[in-house]
Image 1 (cartoon, helix red, strand yellow):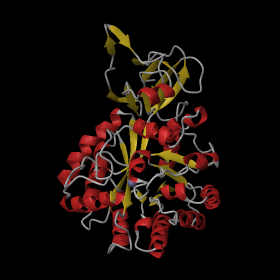
Image 2 (cartoon, protein in one colour; image 1 turned 60 degrees about the vertical axis):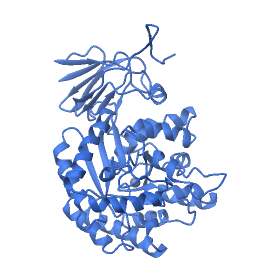
Image 3 (tube, helix red, strand yellow; image 1 turned 180 degrees about the horizontal axis):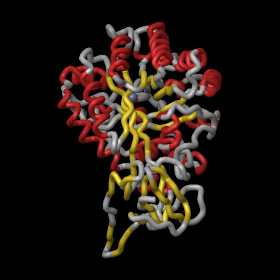
Image 4 (cartoon, protein in one colour; image 1 turned 60 degrees about the horizontal axis):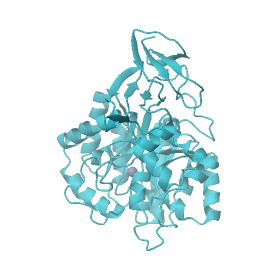
Length: 425
Ligand SMILES: [Zn+2]
């Protein structure tokens, strides 16, 4: 045992306990442990680390460059990005990504899955990210998705650029069917991605139906192709915001088939809360996928931030807790049982996607979390419960990756008239 976290509170377990770490794993969960290095949780929560399962690192910190997104819409964001992408250099990508990655780690992120635009024929951002991935692996692990932002068939050579990105080392095959010019191209986009995954053994993560158009139905093709190619557990559909607007009979059918196919769904509350509903007059739709219905049907749903300070989302500081906080409100998940899903959607449910594990209901979520034998990827909080964390959004006290402290924040202590204020009942 190399390190002990003393006096920890763990969700779902009575009382306090010590957590013993050794060889990068959790080796003991019992009182009164001893080790050469000790840190104290002081009776506060210790949780599994976060997986930021959907982000765009190539565009990060470009907000306002070359111009601000005045409408705030997804489409204006794509237009601005297609101008900015022409000026990408290795140094530009390195500078921004290496500045932002520590933001995520400070907030408890130990694994990050980034989509990278592959519609740039020189694949500059992809190559820079492949380099960075090797350099930072000790403190944050990166998965790279080959993402054809402007389409595979509506953008000349888009399909071949995805194939080239995979040859260069991308970890995951991406897609964007709803952005293609025709429905037929969109279906082809999904089929190309899943065939490529089938041939290469890679997983899939497709931006699917990220629109308020209730006619956008590419998720059904994803489910059918996943079943046909036997890729259950390896395929994730990101966004699926059109599901918000489907008629209930169709939504019921597609949710059943998503479960049957063993698809994962990734929602992106911060971005979609501001990008969707832009064509509506009052009442304005929320444009979030049906998170609660999917979970109730036994589908694995995780949550990703999507953007931090880029043409699509001008806010953020790399904190997955912001994602959960927005989801709690915007997804109407303030009820007690719904709140209990929020931490797992940032950790064990996202980790199952990372590890290509088939999840139905809560089966398949093992191998991650506070149990002996699991990786020692942990967050030590300055508050006692998940609810307190969601409410107060405090900085994390310590972040551990494979049993090593990789981030530490001095506690913020407010004093009013000399009295300490902790925001706890
Ligand atoms: Zn995205």
